[in-house]
Image 1 (cartoon, rainbow, N blue to C red):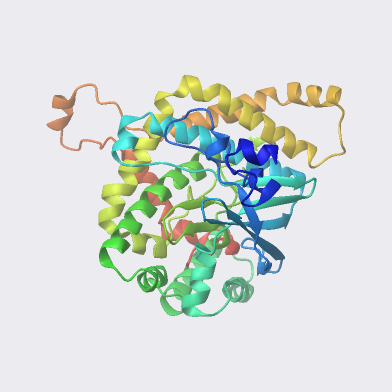
Image 2 (cartoon, rainbow, N blue to C red):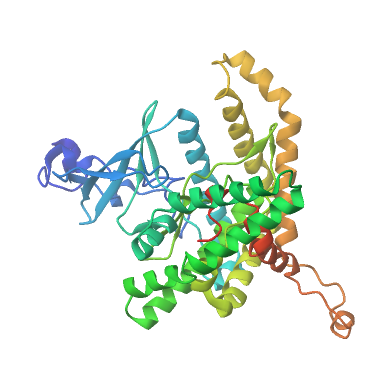
Length: 417
């Protein structure tokens, strides 16, 4: 009763449950425009749990069944969370992802170029419940590229993966002793056949047109989605994220926000590993964006975010070091027996050189994507072939959309979507 009175509820409106806050309202899983201390008295309080429990398939593992609970907050909003079983390393990685997005959001809010373009990022709420259980925020408006394809065309993408692999293997078996160039040519042929004969080039656009009837609202969604995609693509490129398969490409159909699903780095002997394709920009995504938003929103947003992070390099570096240190140590310990504090400190000393190399790797990629400094604009303007200030980003887009590169990706990447 005293707790309820202190919250201004007069001892009613839910009793003691009125002072239990909805999870995920503190940093780093929540961020505001003012960047000030939190005010718990303004946070949404738990009124009740919804009586129904939804059973849904996991967005990243279609064969896994998870439960979704709903909480009713004092602000009248429903908060949905998935109860997921996960190894501790995954949960800690998601917590570091939230910290990275929180820091990145603060940097963008203080950068005039990003503010003018209304570019921002939001962390994903992941709450540890037990050692192998967590709650992750989830809404019915969150859809993956895999779900969109299934709703428009029907067949499971797993069938296309099997078809691609079997067709490639059958053709290579007929050739007997094919070299790498021949294998690449066969993969390209099968990839193009799937693109031309099986998968529609505009199923993503058709889905959003059915979801959003109003033309103005659809254009606003595409604009926000494009800027969010630019931020997500930069993180994919800079941090060498694991394959951005269609089930990991998750977005909100209401706001256009990109959800960083399974934000995990890919290591090769403790060093961030480079991919053939820097980020996911397959033909259906490119079709939804269109050439005008690609040139007018995606590229400028990509460059603005890179420049903002590069300008705060001195501030960003120690934070980046802590994030990468914690991640690589967790990655190593997840593949070995539990260690005591002394052995953990020894491991950190052994990995110090690799950690700093990873920090330099990330900063180098962010710097190369930022706006190129022009020392003599008048001299460059009269040159025959002046290089654009965003030439590196344009080069990355060319690599990400190249059919030869896409056909060489793993079949699970599903470059044809």
